[in-house]
Structures are given as C-alpha cells and as structure tokens.
Length: 220
Image (cartoon, rainbow, N blue to C red; front, top):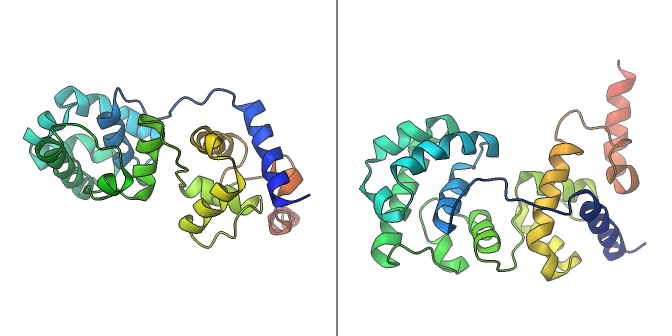
C-alpha cells in the first residue's frame, strides 16, 4: 500500500466516524473566530468557550474591542493563560482591523499573519473556517497523529502541513483537519493511548507506538 492509499483509507475512516464537523470554538463571525483562535493557544477549546461569552458581551467587534483597556481584556481572559500577551494581541489586532480594514477581517494569509498574535496556524483556521479557503491548520494534535500514522516525519508542524497537503485532496483539507482533531480527542490522545484499540493506529501505527505501549504495560 502506498502512502497515498493509506491516507485515502484513513480519510474514509474519519469520514465514517465524523461526517459532521462543527467548529469547536464558539463564534458568530470571522472576527470573533479570530479572537477565539488567538485565545486557544496553549488552552483548551472548552476553556475558551467558557471565557468568550463574557469577553464578547463587552466587545464583539474590532471597534468596540479597541476601546477596551488591555487590563480589562486581560482580566476577562485570564483563565485561558498567557493573558498578558494575548490581551495585548487582541487589542492590537482590533485597532489594526479598525484603522486599516474598516473593521473587517482580511481574507489573505499575509495580511492575517501580519496581525499581532496571529501565526500561520491561526490564519489557517480563519481562512478555512471563516472564509472557506482551502487550508490545513496543523496544531499539536494533528502533528502528533500524522507522525503516529506514518504520514509525516514529525520534524516540525511546517513539514507536517506540507506532507498532509501532498497526501490529501485540496477540497478535503478544511473538513479533514477538524476530523483529525476530533479523532485525536476521542481515540488517539497524547497520554494513555492504546494503539491496539485505536481504529487507525491499530492498522497504521508506527512500531514505536506498540513497543512503547508494551514496555509500559510489561512493567505493571
């Protein structure tokens, strides 16, 4: 079986398990999605969804957010972690969107990645989920699973993104990246993972996964 054939089989498994892929971060438009993704850095989606209602009740547009003090934003988003840097980024990007883009979120990677606190992964999420542009956002979960399944070498997220884009059809990227995230949470977690019981690792998991699992369980 070629790597592309393996990728196609994995995609079919994911489609059967997750035919519907709701966006995990609650939002109402491109701007609120952008802010939510910035908050999600090193924070769970569940925690972000607990914090954003209070934040967006105060300000759910770039113009309104730009009027808030950084300290006010920081106090609201504190449970998400990294609040000093995230609050500055949210206020800063809101000011730029208000002044440069008339309150709209730009629809290009270059313009998004030029905003404070917005890296390639964040821009990819906004481009794919808010605007429907083909993108393959790679977070730590997708990076981990792509390595486990032998789809990428795991050197870095940039390499993983390039490898996955080569293996999967462009029209599948936006949905597939969410399917992989859902699968990782339910079947393929970072800790306590049993590759023998995993629907995909049991077929395609690297040998290292099974050796590590067997070694840990032999000690028990």
